[in-house]
Length: 423
Ligand code: AMP
Ligand code: GLY
Image 1 (cartoon, rainbow, N blue to C red):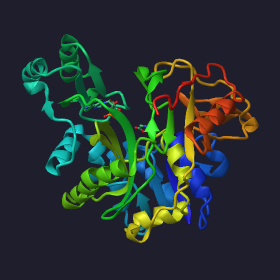
Image 2: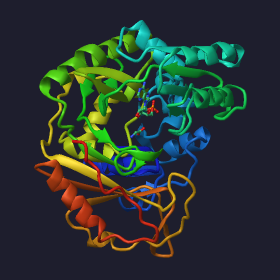
Image 3: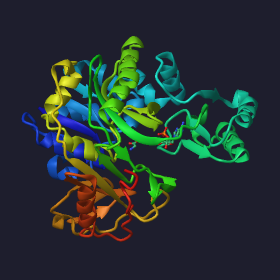
C-alpha cells in the first residue's frame, strides 16, 4: 500500500520511520516533509491546507491511506473533504472529522463535552466581548493563579497563566477587545488552576473501540527547571514512572471510557489518535485538554515502544477493527532531547549548516526544521532535531541522548540539559 503522511515535524519523521518498517508498505509520500523524511519517503512540496492539491497527489500516487500529523488541517476539515470525494471512496484516513476535531479546535466545545460526559476537569466559565465586564468581575472573585484560554487554535500560545489580578484582567481585555489571538480569541475560557504533575496520554480510536498507547511526559518550557516561555516541546520521556497500574486504571475508567462513550453518543465520527493532556492532582487524573493528533515531542518516544506492525495498526484503525488488536510493547525507557535554534520560541535564524548527524550511533536522530540544500542539511525552523535514545532506565537513556548531542553541531544549537529532572 502507498501511504501519505501530512506534516513536517519530528513527529512525522517518526511516523514515516515506523511505516517504513511495516510489512505491506510500498511507497511513502510526505507532505511537505523535511530533510529526514526525504531519506525514507518522497517529499511532496504541497501546502497541506490546499486540499485540492492534496487530493490530486493522492490520486496521482495511488495512495491508499493518509495519516494526518498536525491539528490545523484536521480542524479545517481535511478528513471530511477527502471523504466527500467520490473518486477517493476507498481511501483510508487516520484523522478525525471536522466535528471530532472540535475537541481541540474549540476549548469551549471540549469543556462542554467534558461536563456533559462527567469527565474530571477544572471548573470554568466562558466570556466574550459581550460580557467582558462580567469576566473582569469573575476574575476578581476567584483566587490566583488565573488560567485564561483562547477558545480557538493559537499554536500553543493561547493559554495564559497569570499571578496578578490586574494583569489577568488586562489580558482578558486584550484578547476579547484587542484581538490578541485574532478570531481564536473571540471567546475566552477562564478555568480553575490545577496543581499537580502533567502527563500525556494517547489513545488510538477507530470510531467505537480504542487502544491505549504508551504514555509520555513532555517538557514544554524553554528554560531549565520548567521556566521561561512555552515552546512546542523541548524533550520527552516514555514511560512515565509515576503512572502505576492503579493510576492507569483510574485514567481508563474515569477518563478514557467516558471520552469514547461521549464520542459515540455525540456522533463525533472520531477515527485517529486522541491525545489527552492530563494532570495528576493528589492521586486523581484531570483533563487539561484534548488534542486530536499525536504529541510532538512525545511521538518520538511513544512510537518506538510499539512493536506491532504500524501500517497494519493504521489500517485497522481506519477500518474500525481495533477490537481485534492488542498492543505489543517494548518495556525499555525512551528519552528525547530536542535541539532548537538559538532564540526559539521567539525569533531565530534559519539556514545554519548541520554537521555530525552521521556520527550519532547510540541514538536515532529525527528531523523537524531541516532542509536539504546543495548537498548540505540546513536548519529551517525553531525545533531542529530530536535525539531519541533507549535504555533500561531514564538515566541510561538520557546519558545516550546527551552524549549524542555532543556529536551534532550547528550555530546556535540550544537544548535543555535537565530533561527528566522531575521524574
Ligand atoms: P494547553 O494548551 O491547554 O495544554 O495548556 C498549556 C499548559 O498550560 C498546560 O500544559 C499546563 O501546563 C497549563 N495549564 C492549562 N490549563 C491548566 C489548569 N487548569 N491548571 C494548571 N495548569 C494549566
Ligand atoms: N507536546 C505537546 C503537543 O504536541 O501539543
